Image (cartoon, rainbow, N blue to C red; front, side, top):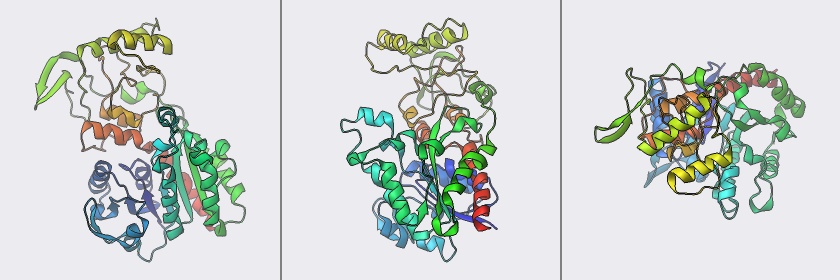
Amino acid sequence: MSYKYIDLFAGCGGLSEGFHKTPDYDFVAAVEWEKEPANNLINRLQTKWGEKNAADKVMRFDIQRTDDLFSGWTEDEDYGSHQGLDSLVGDEPIDLIVGGPPCQAYSLAGRIQDKNGMKDDYRNYLFESYIKVVDRFKPKIFVFENVVGFLSAKPKDTLVVDLVREEFDKHGYAIVSDLKKYALQDLSLYGVPQKRNRVIIIGIRKDLYEDTEALLQDFYKNILPSYQEPKKTVGESLNDLPKLYPVKEYRLNGKKFSHTQPDVVVPNHIPRYHNEKDISTFELLASDIESGRKEYVSTERLRELYTERTGKKSAVHKYYVLRSDEPSNTIPAHLYKDGLRHIHPDSKQARSITVREAARLQSFDDDYEFVSSAGANYKMIGNAVPVLFSYKLAQSLVKLLKIIET
């Protein structure tokens, strides 16, 4: 038996990729409003997973327009035409809905930078659209993934988690009582080579199991942790990739380059252009760690160096060198703007990480080829759920579903 599932806020498919890798699931549809991630997901479904109707199953649409999402839309200026989610689902029951509303509205960094603490951000309420889809198809369970800041976000002075719990309860679903204790997960414990904490909320339809609280606690304490493995380091993840060294600036196909091209073709392993000042800074910082001097590891010293090198001041330190013998720092969507906080640990390469290296640290397989611009690729990779974790989550949820069904 295959469990049918829908992926909401799908991005380029990091979360659903793990479910595709698990033979117990049958992909029905994905919803994603941004063009580039949707195109990449369609390409992946066609080239890797043999989905002939991928362009139909990946619905590029605004999930807030839920009536149109269900029934279909025609000749929309932004989204074209589609028969709707109801038509894709048909009469078959949906067993699982997965997804996580865009996390920027809940991020701690976003709240610091926004004058109103993100209280007016519409993304705070995208969970309502998620709940409408859950209520429509009434899956046995759902997965609601988000950033740590989700636990403390208070738009309009009410905790988002309280709103979410109340709404899910109203629609017949139970989530674990203590989200901070159980749902907050360290993904590095599952072999993902980066420090990445995420809130993984599992909901169970209350009419399917008598003691949902006990079952959910068992899932978080025993079932999911049974898939943990030793932590993986940056060096283990990146060292076999072709090395890219700084050279005299050159042009290739109209683009400026500051580093060598890979001698073996690895998809998306193309170095970003860096000016001479950045290259010398990266070399200094990486060699500082390699040598054991560690003169530039404190926030204060890194901020001073940034001012010395750029003439600008920053409240936070802008530079960070990945440590070869540790998991990476978190891979963020911000990578599309610059790579200053993701400097390669090899001082001889003196550069920020490539799209492929970011994908490796997010545990995407090398055969996932990203087909958009480098900036768009960095952004969608940073927004994705790490594939290795999603694979282990998918396997653990098979066990949960079987318990519910017995």
